[in-house]
Length: 338
Image 1: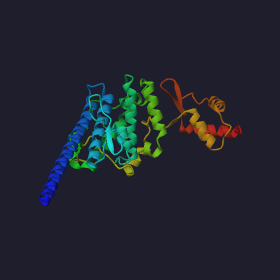
Image 2 (image 1 turned 45 degrees about the horizontal axis):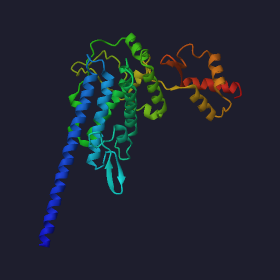
Image 3 (image 1 turned 60 degrees about the vertical axis):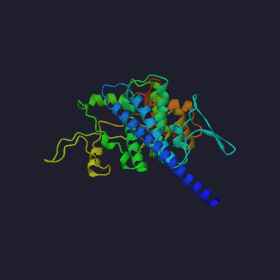
Image 4 (image 1 turned 120 degrees about the vertical axis):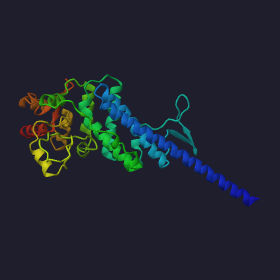
């Protein structure tokens, strides 16, 4: 009897384990399905010319897509992605008003030590999270073009991540196509995209501050912000497929030729510094006497705000200095023995 009872217990345990495995797989599959749909919806809405609330909607849906994606990953590796406190060996879960367990938000997913996402992708997603916090509290206008490169990187990162973690069957690339534009981009349009004079101050300040504080290698990574230079193609060999977009490798002779002639369009997102940051940089180089008064005398003496060569006005109020102004301040320090 004892032997039979033991065999029964083993069978019951095996049956219970199988049910739990199926449940985990079912929930993971549902999370991945909803994650893909959220990202497809985000891209579809952003590419819809009749919708004006593009960026705000994209951010919300993209964050949901990434959150569900990471929840599926953590469920697969048996990491509990819910908030709880330990009471002895028992977990006491944080719950919503109506009793549901509170799952990790995206930022908590990214900060976990077992997160599979690389540094550049994390920086991109944390940029979007911070931007969402800003747009929650104020209506935004004309921010689409200021953040589109980061949205593009977010989509490409998502595609690469879901395929690497769960296989090509979850790819979304075949379900999307390039948006068709009804008019050519002219130089006046380019200038309008670059200047973005009507962007809310809180948004422009957030973008500048975030870009400035991340490492240069992250800022320049296509996984953080995917920037592409478009050049009109005027000739094709007969019989060659006539694609709207043709990509060339960055280190190819074709790309080098394009970059050598690259004059009209330049990146808007130059690295910018507040005066106190430049003062601190130069103090670390040994110019200990430099202070705000000296800095002010330097730029006034050079009339450095007469154009946008050395800096730019952000949000109509705060002036930020470009990196090329730092050597000018250093020369001033040398001349004044600071």
